[in-house]
Length: 447
Image 1: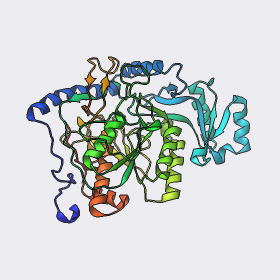
Image 2 (image 1 turned 30 degrees about the vertical axis):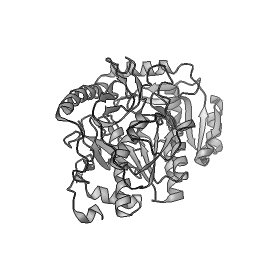
Image 3 (image 1 turned 90 degrees about the horizontal axis):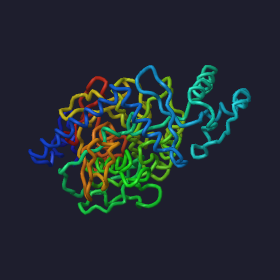
Image 4 (image 1 turned 90 degrees about the vertical axis):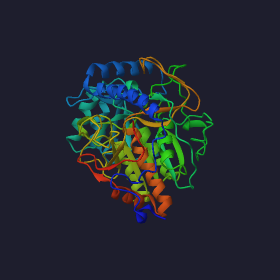
């Protein structure tokens, strides 16, 4: 029977008390101390520019000589975080790139143009690694002032400057696996899923095989230590499955082990996932943009999805951890469900992005979820942890609010026998309105 008709929910609690905290009182107190330290580090990145610069320098240094990893460049911003872009790349909408005047203007710069076929040729990449990022941005602004849709190839990270100091913390807590009826398939576009075969039943019944390009290698960049964002996609999948253990999860590895991808990469993955049959997408990453411009690559992907499937597909994205009201993409696109972060008490989180463009919010501080096996570097955690097999961890960030909404949509689809868009409407009706945080939805407990 539909929970809508049973009335077993209250505003802000869409499933009542169906997800009690599985931890003992003693374990919860220990975890609360850990999460306070984690949240301090999350706030520190927003308050201290020197911390962000040093983290970025570390991340850039780890990528030297790796042609398979996006090379990061930063452009100073007068409004908070510096913008991260892919080295030497300018994006132009195809209809404008074909304009003879645009071609004549760009020719002296020595760009190598390439049509992005995976986005149905809607975007052209112009590349010249010798052009400095600030000048590249000046070129894009010059074109935009003449009506040309042009931007740099923004880098979409899993956090403002990687998760780094606000990464996972171990917890002895865990939730027992309880199988539910099969619901629908959802796609997680992230940095892959571990190929560890857990013995506690979590993350074992995924639709996509764990081979090739959907596996998180965990320690690819600086072995033997875990990459800076190792296990992020695994934990996101674990959050979804905790809300609905019957959901099928298809993982698409579009971000690297440190949690970065240029926007074209994630845009291509979005289109691929939908063409593979996914009707709900989880995007636990995001970026603010230069001049708050709409990212051209992601825009093209959403156009293709809408053209081919109308409103059959629901795209859910993390609102961002920037602590301000500036739009963070892809969450800020009007056709995307943007999810901000709440405290354990259901109040607005100070570090969460927020604003009129936010659709809803969920608890995002100290979310308990399955993690991966491995050893942290001291660059990630001043007191590095070693995670055993079948480990669980505490994460904070809107990355772990968004998958709760995805899992909730999947659950309502199964319970009510409705498609994802209708399930989303039902879910939002069960929320409570919070200014700048949309409809607050307390689903999984925080810490």
